[in-house]
Image 1 (cartoon, helix red, strand yellow):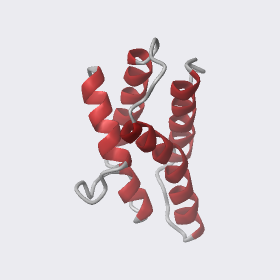
Image 2 (cartoon, helix red, strand yellow; image 1 turned 45 degrees about the vertical axis):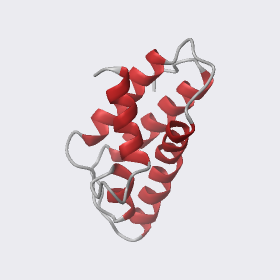
Image 3 (cartoon, rainbow, N blue to C red; image 1 turned 180 degrees about the horizontal axis):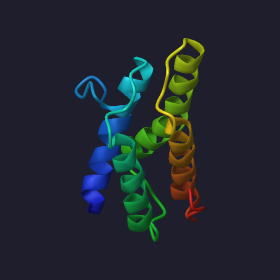
Image 4 (cartoon, rainbow, N blue to C red; image 1 turned 30 degrees about the vertical axis):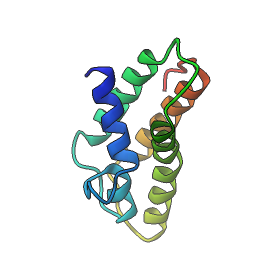
Length: 114
């Protein structure tokens, strides 16, 4: 995956829910598990983005918003679903923690291994 593909994927998964009903945030908000491989693709894109931004001091606003939403809202939707009785895939909780750690790494400029 190249840098631009990673950016596009993250923006699509984190912001563009109306145009992409299968976006990660949309699915979680609806209490629907991610598509198989979807979280893996997001995690890979986050790592590619981190590597591509190593020397950068700025982020595009749309990308920053998407990263923030993926990090915070995915967890919120997960917890809301859990309280409502949704049975999530067994590793989704850990994967959402990894997403949050990767986003934090991008903002901090230092990879923490998430």
